Length: 337
Image (tube, rainbow, N blue to C red; front, side, top):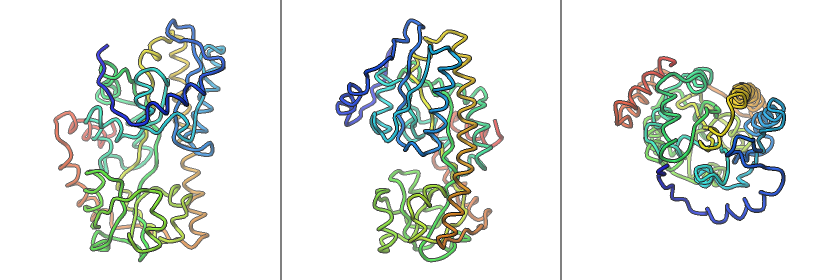
């Protein structure tokens, strides 16, 4: 198999961690006998992703009579997402959770599902991603020959909206001249500008003090992160722009997946279906808990002029769709396919 290299800093240090974690009862799954697979995750043990995937591993072990299982390694124990992607590709790690931006670096067609307003809400997103039609299935298999990676589906990261230090936002005009923290990428900068703000790339760990000191006036994220990072304390106005429904992908080493017997693969697929459904339920509850907690802490949540933002964001999709296949993926997703 010809593989496209993934250039990542820090692989050597991740390899040392793998050596430390490799003891125990894992067996080589290459002959179909089974394996306890290692899954790399960048979230904590309390996060919905960890809970759902850990339950997936236990259910898989039970349904295959111990032939297969999954050990979830949280907190970037096996490396950050870029490192984990390389380690799954070369087989050092079996599975990982990675962002769409990571997969865009290998196939730009993944851009279509990171664009604003491609999904109306979480239910729409999960229908497209985890009940894939022909085009999405082809996209998920597109890295198998080049990188030995298969995408099995996705986990929602919730709708992202704007929150500010200065007051509620109802239209892009309310963000004129305001500095908004963004993740550093051309797409994120374009989204912030379409929302009406001046994009200000900033490390996530610096955001609380950035909002507090006035270095930035606004940021954007889901309600769970807004609450758990305590950003409501310094930016108490959360406005439902819902400009992007965030998405993480679950990937697996293709050789590992193909080593499963038909019976075990069926059990794996059934377990995955239960895992993403459980994750969605957990995320929904965590979102409501976050809203309640932030409201109790003084935050206000405001609806916006959705049409005004949608019109502005439509231009972003037009700018970043570069190929016919990206357009087809975007259009089909918008139609719920």
